[in-house]
Figure 1 (cartoon, helix red, strand yellow):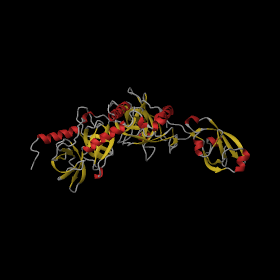
Figure 2 (cartoon, chains in turn cyan, yellow):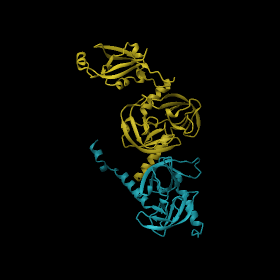
Figure 3 (cartoon, chains in turn brown, blue):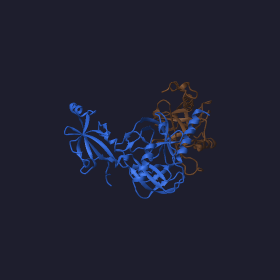
Length: 206
Length: 299
């Protein structure tokens, strides 16, 4: 190996990939929350808005839940709506100014595109995994995407956590592992679900 | 642009570029496999995924399904070639054979396209598969070969094809057959329908040569291969070899194990003479054996 390669980091451009990966991972961790449910174990969730709106899977959000943020703060949370059909749930905590997801467009993904996911696999400390878009399982370009198929190593506990593109924009939330593939619910569907929660009052149901 | 975004774009572009030559191979029940349009009208795939000989179809990248015929198969390297009539779509752009390094990011493609990403985990030299096929370079990859990915391309970050992936040659780690081997064997398969293997019709067992004997005969090596089995009317028997003969050199080069002899029995040697140095009854003699073609089982 040549001298130049030994001191690779001294070369212009080297180290930038490492730094941008670390930056993206750090951002993703901060918008990932840990969801604890009584007797049902631990899952993950994605902070969708700074004012305390959090998205996760219906199979994660069994009432009552508490939410632990990346900075260690713990909140009692209200599960505002659960949709087992979509496997989505909207959670609200009383907080503001939270680090929240920048939402990307899940309809413009390309196979091979880089993805980062964050969550609490096996309920352990927060973990980030990297992979790529595995396939666009859509028959026609006009139909909305139902699942993002990702070549990502996930574990139980990752459910509800964010999947982001290389720009750090959240394009989905993890929902399932099938045949070694990660299946995520596209951000467009999450957005649509949350909008329905916000526009169909009252979300404070008895 | 941000480094991460530019890497992401490179990966997506690599998939899109390589996928133009990637096809679906329908040659078995249930899960279709993947193939690569190697040169005009010729699709390469993994031999173990071709389970039917008739009514094979190939799904082009544009979604059209076209009939294909089996051009040839070589179970020993897990390669098969299919001949496709309507092949007016791009062929594979191949990477330089020397360009691969351990740690390089690579993609495996399945029909669709579907993709899987990982790194080159190990590289080795020329190797021989369990079934005797000779492969130019050992390429181990750390990525997931999803069902149906066998026969698909291993692609570098520039979208060039490095080899053909298969789960059929190793039970543990996914392997790629390098592009140079695919090209070399592909030609043989198109010409002959199979890859001929050189064959002598002889079984050896290594033995240590007595130092005094080796010295008196001027033999360099310390080891010889004693003939323990001789195929009646095989190439070696026809050349006059006898049970108990000790092979000490082939083409003037000392032999240490049966692999040294195997290495001289590539497809190109079939029908050509090899010079064998033999110790018989305490004397060194030279025998010329015409390499035969190994009979193929079940044919």
